[in-house]
Image (cartoon, rainbow, N blue to C red; front, side, top):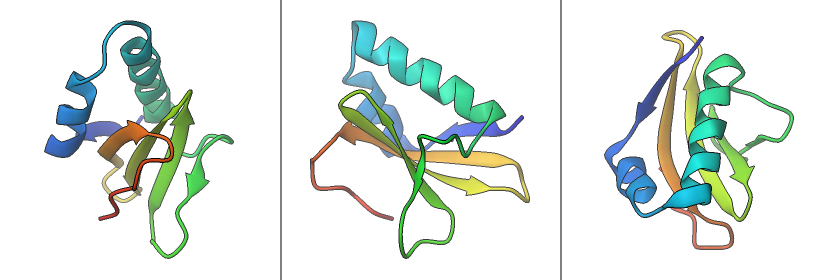
Length: 86
């Protein structure tokens, strides 16, 4: 199991959601702890360990640290929005 770390930007993003959308995103984050590289996740080109996971119309952007077994979630945003890249 990986430890999930929500960066401040992702915490702010998650607070914006309510109801079903928030539940789906939280369920996807829980699944990432066990399998940080699911088939639906895409590796971001040009970044060593940055990934994105689509959850409905939203994207979860995260980095994987295998050495420390941590997932750093740094953005949760609407698909198609200008993506913030670290």
